[in-house]
Length: 389
Image 1 (cartoon, rainbow, N blue to C red):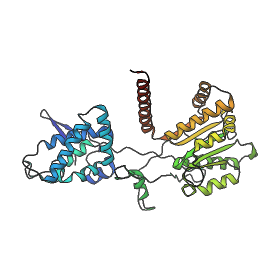
Image 2 (image 1 turned 120 degrees about the horizontal axis):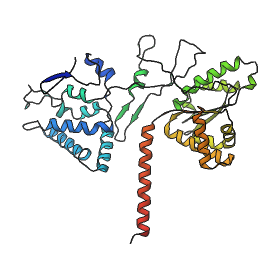
Image 3 (image 1 turned 180 degrees about the vertical axis):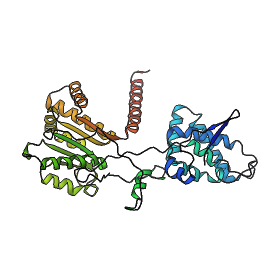
Image 4 (image 1 turned 135 degrees about the horizontal axis):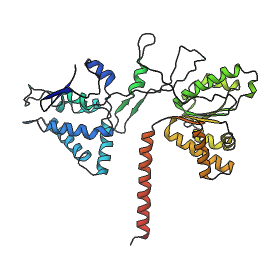
C-alpha cells in the first residue's frame, strides 16, 4: 500500500516513516517504531481528542469513562502548566510505554466500529492515521566483541535482552534485543551493516591501557584484548608490552560474561582484571568507580604516562562517575588542581587517548538537569526560610 496527500486539490506523496509501497506486515514489523516518547504524547492526545469530538450519540458507561480519561490526560499534558505537562507525560508513558499499550487499553472506545459514525461504522481511530503519526524505526548500534584475528569471516556482538517493568507494572520488552534473542541460528537472516569506528585499541602495543566496562559494556574490550593477545604472541619480547588493566563491573559472579576468556588472559599475563560486584551479599556494594578510587595511586601514574589509552563503554552516568574518580586520583596523587586534572584528561581526549562508547547520554543529561533544578529550588527554599521575614 501507499499514501497520498490531497491538499488544495493537489495530490502528492505523503511523508511516511515507512518506504512505500510495502505490505502492512513489513511496515509494522520492521519500519515503524511503536514505542512512545515524551515528544509524541501531546500530539497523540491532540489527535485522539479531535477524533473523539466527532462521536455522536450515546456511548457505553465504560467508553464514557475512557473518553473522560483521555480528555483529562489531554488537559494535563497539553493544556497544563510546564510542571503539569512533565508530570502528566511521565505518568502517561509509565502506563502506556508503547502505542500498543495505549490502543489495547482504549480499544473499546477507539478501535471498535462506531455505530453512530457516518463512515460505514468505521473505528474512531483509523490505522492510516496511526501509521502517519508514528516515527520510523531507528537502527540499533552494537559494539563488535570479536577480533578479525580470531576469524576474519565472523563478527560477534554482546546483547543484554531487555525486560523491564514500569512503576505502574507494565512490562516493557526491548525491541531489538528480543528480536535478536529469537533469531534461529542457520535459519533466519538479519539485515545489518558493519560500520567503522574510532573506538579502537592503541596501535602501539607498548602503550599502557585502562579499560572500564559494565555489563555488556565489556563487548568492545573483548575485541581489543583478543587483538592484544595475538600481537603479544608474535612479539620477540612479550614482556615489553604495556600494562593493561580491565575494570569490569556487574551485580554478582553469576552475571559475569566472558568469564573463561578473561580469567585465561589474566593467567597468561595479558591483562590485570579488577572486578566490581554491586550485589554480592554479604560483600559491600562495589562499583567500577570505587575500584578506580581504590587504585588511585596506580591510576594516577598511568594517566600521567604520555602513551596511556583510557577506554570506557557502558552507561553515561557510570562514565561520569569514573571521570570524577580519575580527576580525584590526579588531584590526590598527582598534586593537580581540579582545573589542571580536567585539562589533562581533555588533552588525552584531543590526542585520541581517552575514548568512550556510551548509551543513555540524553537520559542522563535530562536527569542531571532535573537534579540541578531540584538543588537550586532547595537552596532557594533554605535561603527564604533563613533570611526572609
